[in-house]
Image (cartoon, rainbow, N blue to C red; front, side):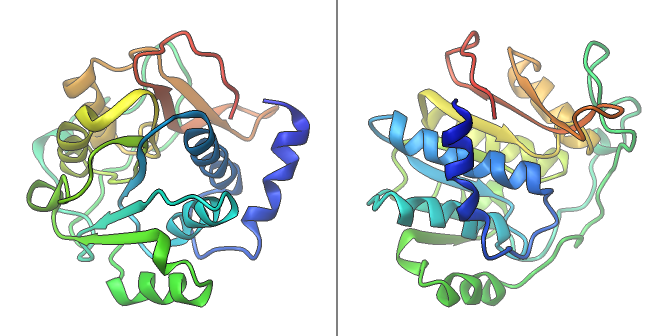
Length: 236
């Protein structure tokens, strides 16, 4: 991707959104969503784990900026994270011996990151983005895949825990089109998410890390890849 294209998307980060995701990962989300919509002939955007809706707003801004009739499916329990499972407690779950990871290796507690659906709806209404988004409420093993979702061009997973990641992957990954972008925001910082990737896909399966603080002591929280295109070289 050219530097000019990179710069041209910075305006989509303004005004700032209510998100605990770093600016680097916010911009990566915007770039991936833009590439998915512009570069793939079909597929909606899907986000699992929306919290207060910050990155939901960013992805909806992409759809509006491209005048796209595709849809963003924003999926969340709206009761916070599920209870930790055995896989979340497994030692050494985070990261991989061959790539740097974040120094922390979280577990995630039941009810953590809880925000109401009304908070997300308000954020979307404020920017007149409601028409681009369908909100899906419920635990992922009960609500996914939502009725009407046929194919996915970008799947953004932000479920933190083993269940929050594995249930979304197992139910939605088959719908990701060839070349579709899959992004896992917690693979370097929550051991359950990393374990889920290994169990379902045999991670790292050609994943690319999204490095934080480039030029300093490297670490990462997110990984991404394109389905069926392991050697695809894109920089986000």
